[in-house]
Length: 221
Image (cartoon, rainbow, N blue to C red; front, side, top):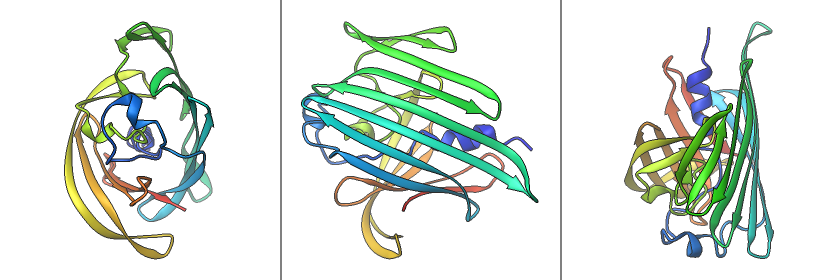
């Protein structure tokens, strides 16, 4: 059973985010996110299959975002699917200056390396040339302007993805055993996610249905 595509898809939506700060890159990263680390659990049909950790490191006007993900889907002690992912985003003065990622997609390697070059992001995905506008935001969802975009940068394959975002308003959800008020957005088109941010602008939950019909959830620990 191969579930790589739907499982990998959820990982694009796991970083911290804010939905209320202005779309300007220079303003958006002035004070958000704060330095620190958050951890998430990943479940499939209610059963835990993996985790993601996201670390934000600040040094003056520079922001480093490091992501580590590991997933293993097993049945009767056998691993049906595995995935590992390491990524680093470098931001300076609110601009993305580099994005690198390396993943093992059930034995299939993926590697992205992009750097700011003038008004373009240039680099490669598995050796194939990539060239995009420097204003493109990675689909890691932590950036405050993510929910205002119509195109996002896929950090797994270094591709531009068309998206549409609908504001679903505030809802009450349970996180870490307690009810909180969170803002719900629905992303559709080439990336499909339901995402919830808390009042501090942190991503607290992600939901979507995989192609095999299983429900994937990513929840703040």
